[in-house]
Image 1 (cartoon, each protein chain N blue to C red):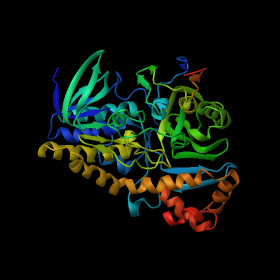
Image 2: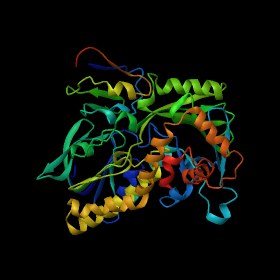
Image 3: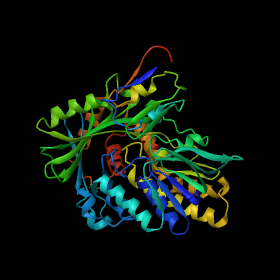
Length: 58
Length: 394
């Protein structure tokens, strides 16, 4: 599962751009991870501030 | 609410607004922006070429924060190469830079679209496309929590680096980690940066990217960096930025933190589908070498707007008609994108020592073109062996 640290997220959309399953939605300051996420963690790498964390199984 | 337009443009950045403005001269146009405020928050280093900009809008001091006349490039050991256009201005015309105030600039462009007749909606997000018989026939939108279907003859997706519009139509715009720059920037005050220079820092600690200092007057500047995401080495862009700032401007204090991402990819195979065109970052129209995207987005927006008018006039927006968009942008700025992607792929592999060697080889040379092509020409001449791999590109 991918979790979002909202205290860090800068709402820039980098994670949305790299998500291979198109599972992330950015709405203003709200980042939503959809249930098609496979926890591949590509979004974790690209985030400029490290707001995303991958934990355990998808 | 009206549920049918000739053209719907998704995203009111520079590409979307110019597309909407161009199409609105002849068609009914709706321009939607998912944020509640066009232009904010900023996700940009704000440096642009003067001549590129002036084609689309009369410069206004309201949204111009700086006009640096030269660029300085620093290699990892501090060797500096200066690019100046001052001396060649009289001969080839001014191509020096503006540092924009994007918040105000983007609003101005959206206003110009509205003045041309476009309807504008903010806090209005595209949630999907209306597709029938393999043809995009409109956009599903959510405005302030309510869902609507808006039918359109042509849809223009200008929804930025996080574009969904293309993917909904079957165009794979997902970026690989090696093809996206992860960026962080402070707008800082108490910064002793020269107002005459845009500065670029290559190599360590920012390997696989570069750091920049763009002056915005009154001892302020945009100080940021971008690193290709596959080269972050377990660190975050903000870590590299804090390290850079503490070294170069220890007295600087941030007024704003900007985060963002920029496509630095090879060109997309297709930027159209039946009834759909992609513009700007959504179409990966950023320069993969510099990361600059504003001017290309506006160029692409203009072309898309013109082609949309034609499609509406002929009542046919099949790919056969929209191919004109594709061929026009490829013949215009597409050639440079293609070349600069290869140049980027080459330069990104150079070591600190090689970058130092390159910088030393042209140190003191009078480079009177403030462009990447001008710089490359000089580098090639001085380093034919080291740069053998990109020689054929110039």
